[in-house]
Amino acid sequence: MKKLIVLSACLILAFCQSGCVCISTGKHNEKHVEKESCSDWRPEHVIFVGFDGLCAKSIRDGADMPTLRDLMAKGSSTLESRTILPSSSACNWASIFMGSGIELHGYTTWGSKAPDLEPRVVNENGRYPDVFWQYHKKNPDAEIGYIFEWDGMDFLTDPAATDFRLNTKDCTTAAVQYIKEKKPNLCGVIYDQPDAVGHKDGWRSPEYMAKILELDNALKEIIAALDEAGILKESVVIVTSDHGGIDKGHGGMKMEEMQRPVVFYGKNVKKGYTIEESTVVYDLAATMAWLLDVEPPQVWTGRPIRSAFKTK
Image 1 (cartoon, rainbow, N blue to C red):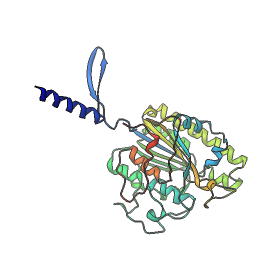
Image 2: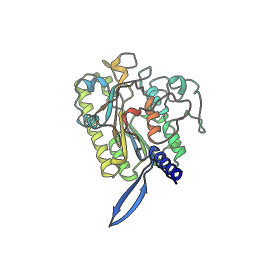
Image 3: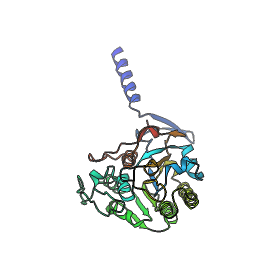
Image 4: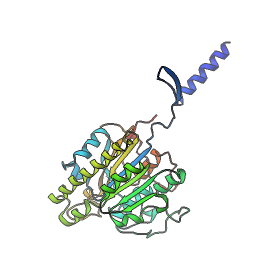
């Protein structure tokens, strides 16, 4: 009898330590027991919002972005995440989605439309594996969207992975409508600003700051769409950029060019948390894959930014 009691206690202890628990819930005086999944901390939706050329220094220096600052206060963030080199667009967007630097995915310049170097590996579609394809391959029924303003973005993710793919000069309207109608499981929304204004008027110009506020209002509309669609509580929103800028350019090794914001907001994201560890653009692909419970390819060098989340 004592052996049976000891064995039962051990089994109960092992079950509790596994992180899976049973919870009782009552409904109309009828009680039932439900098993809580070990992966319940993960979101059902990951929404990526990218602003081309948004500089961390501008936020640090007090840029008027009330929505972004609210997400930072209610989520986790860093203003010290770095680009790869060169600190230019196509190679960094590629790294954000492909989990690696230029030495592996092969997109080396600001405007690369195909690998300039032979990729270290290619997938079944003949492309370097990105987070959209990895997620689609594991969950072929998932809804995946990709909405972008700069036509160069079309070459940086696998089109075979996306259910909805749109090059438009009005990302906000398209994203809001898509989110409300389709409730995507994974969606990228990438603006071509404030980069263009930075090149024309300068990264510290009044015009640049005005454009930042305009983009912040667009972000507010996207958050509102998630709420209206009824999926905000099951979402993680990621807001970031590909690079910063200095004077009227970027691509070099100044911190103003290389440092960009990374903000996480939503389900099981730590509140008011500053990410202290080193992060690089390619860590975002690894983080998205981790949130979506997708095994990253061996060739990826990115690491999930786990410290930003409360996990079980």
